[in-house]
Length: 258
Image 1 (cartoon, rainbow, N blue to C red):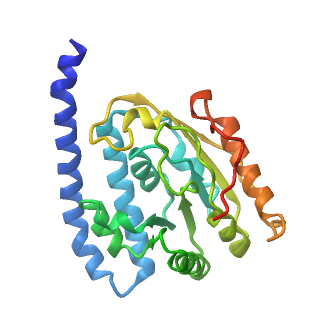
Image 2: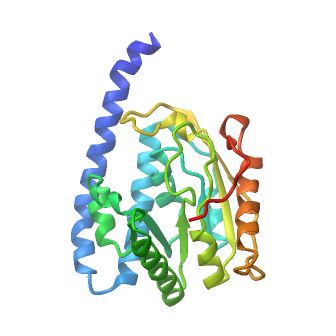
Image 3: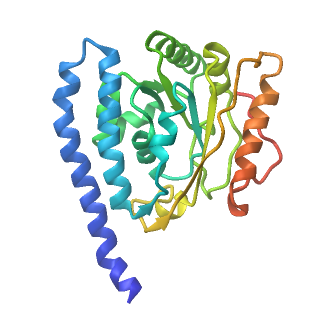
């Protein structure tokens, strides 16, 4: 009976998700065009779009989140919000949970995601070409400039890509370089079970209880270039300790040379 229900419900949920995303994106497209002269206002508008879009997409996906997430994050900004990355759901969770005034970074391929990607390209947030070190370094400098100019928070997935099996991957050091430049605290956001709701590489979603733990902000005022690797490893270790056993990293290594 459950399989028969899934046969009808899952495709219907998929259609409703993408129909809603298309409609709300069409409504916001002219807003971003009007705001083209002001990058700051486009970033703020993208936060509003994300809060409206993300919450509905989370609901339609069948994910059940604990209450109070947005209020808790709002109390910690400005900050560098970092989260583990295992699911397509992470995108919608991030754009919903991020407080107004939060800058986003995403890989260049995001611009090709239907509806969401085209608006992201107009939004004033940062696109990163991860395959080109020079372009990636330029994107990091652009992010630092925007954070300092507009006094914004930023949301980053430091693994750089989604995990295939839900396990924590090594962290890249981009978030730590942002901390060095801005001295903002790092706020770890540990998400568990999202990969069971909306797995990587799958179009469908399944109802699942998703756990979200917001760890205490980590001060970065004493971070230096010399101790950066140690701090990245320490943050990675906090994620590993907070995740369930089936999402802990397979290797001891916590830091990528990139």
